[in-house]
Image 1 (tube, rainbow, N blue to C red):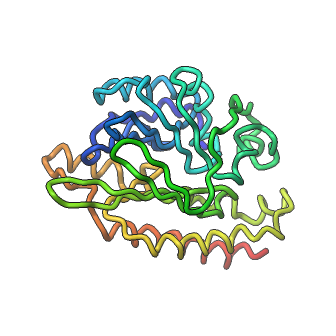
Image 2: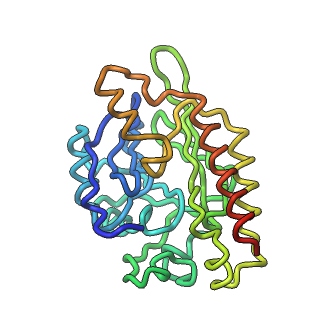
Image 3: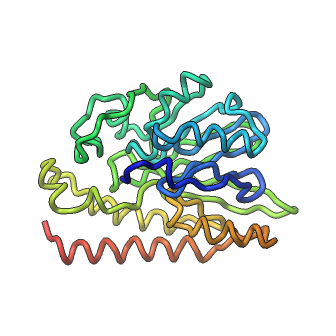
Length: 267
């Protein structure tokens, strides 16, 4: 987490076809224009909600067209603004079943803000608790929901098809790749040794490797080089985010980071 997340803004842009980036450097937010309304992926920090709303307008859409808000996981940099957005738009909310307690306030022991000694965001009760294999369908978009626990118990990854120029591309995002919740100090402090979050994360990496992804959507800008690829878009490369190798490279990095953590911080 960072202080003053509103200071690290980014210009919104059309990432590829019906996918738009409306987030910031600290934590990404994306919208999918389904033709029957918008799907928002992660609401982000509550302190920068006004920037997300403004970015949606800048991309030519209305925030009132948000029909679904889907969450990669329940941490504040991905879900804190949801309560306000729901009150504004009436959007339907989705989150992994095991992360429900993080966002509805019933599991304060798992909330990241507890570690930072900051006030928790306004809680919300999700409309849909996702389970592995669920599908989210709206308009021209069907999203495959894959449980990928580790970063949190209810982390989910999302995969969907995007049609462009007579071709079908597969977009995908890994729901949570940070090792902050896998560190020995965190696990011991919350007495999570028996839950094997590290093993779950390794299994989730392996599960993600089975997915073919042409367009890697990061839930943090550094994961898929959002800023660098955006510059390529500005220079005329409309396929800047189409890179089938990026997905595997990212998962390799996740695995090597986990290997290093287990070596340096054994439980």
